[in-house]
Length: 285
Ligand code: GUN
Image (cartoon, rainbow, N blue to C red; front, side, top):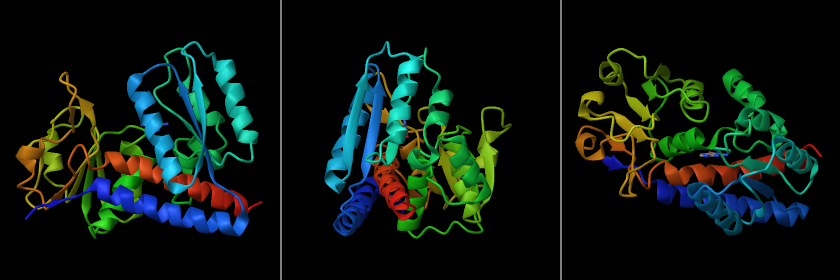
């Protein structure tokens, strides 16, 4: 029987844990964790993600500070906002929703956020900490994948994990997190020869490429754990992952669906990272 890994349920569990930790922390310190969410422009998908993050904050007792800026915001204006949020004691986490409009420099913005408030884990300092195996905020999507593996008692140490995709947001940090947990890790990408053959070596296969249903049964070893990070919107408006679920399900020992797999975990781990950033700031104050 294939286990269907339920991200919606696990995200609810994580939010419950964060809500409990926040309530206790706030009772002891009178400090409420604060998350600033910055959204530039009118992208409808980004607007909907940001609204959901604000709803999550309400649920777990985190104060959200909403900054919705016009499409024509300049780099200087955005820089000034980041500087202000960096200096604001009530703000423990800063999230700038990506992608930014083309005229803005994402890398410059990411690097400007104070590393201790970078709850996305995208800052070069925090990525460096991950590389070195030191504590720091971890990127929410791959961190959510690790939590799913733990929740379902899936052993990571000693396995061969194959990650398809090498983005800074998912593929690279995912590979490092699996390595940190003692997997033997292969990172594949568009220039990998015979990708299906490499993927068939995987005990844990993580697909983070952004190509609808690319991973079919020829990529999957019998009994592998298949994690689908892809969220691709079809022309009809439905969501499909990078994995052809119907074709792969029977071969896998466990698999994440889309929607309802990795997706909900990203926002839940953001709540967890924000609480941790606040507790760390308070501890060092
Ligand atoms: N856009 C898509 N995913 C993310 C994310 O995890 N963080 C931010 N800041 N923007 C995103």
